[in-house]
Length: 208
Image 1 (spheres, helix red, strand yellow):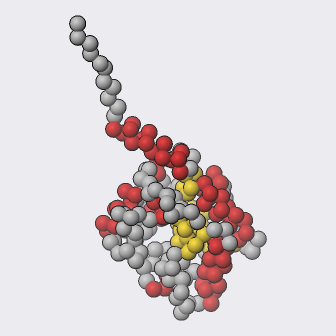
Image 2 (tube, rainbow, N blue to C red; image 1 turned 135 degrees about the vertical axis):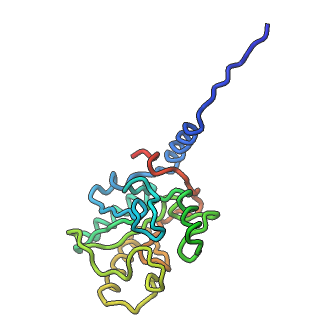
Image 3 (tube, rainbow, N blue to C red; image 1 turned 90 degrees about the vertical axis):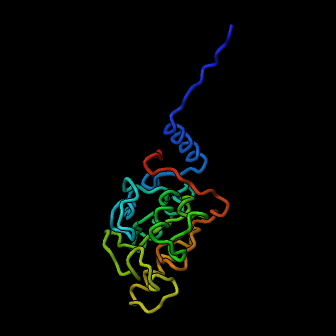
């Protein structure tokens, strides 16, 4: 008598979701709002107001690794004592989105090659600006994602107020373990990213 072994077929979508959940658990990506409830979010890649003019994220949500989110909360607390707070433009970015950006704008000075990935793809980078504690905009060197020399941290031919605010932001971030990217005044990497993997977990598949 022949014996038959049953084969269970698992849908590809379910496999991807299970792997995404496992990876999320290992890397501890957390939603920024759960750590900093009053953080101001302006996630540009959830809109068309960005350099690719396309919606790349499904919602105005931001994720970081837990330790980076906790450190950013400390930055926020420090800034508030001086009448400022943070506005966040971007955090964790799926690798598939990085590939799309590279297809549109393959310039390594401003867009990381997806072959090596970005600190954003690891959940260790955050794009931020400074605003008043009441939520009003203030002078900064350039708009977000400005690909000119004015976005560089070393660029000095700017209004005094913009230079002052850039320095306040940089000092506050560096005091809590972040390092600024030289070509983008808004981009900061949190310490410890060096050996962490690039992730491709869709934004809408990350649990809070």
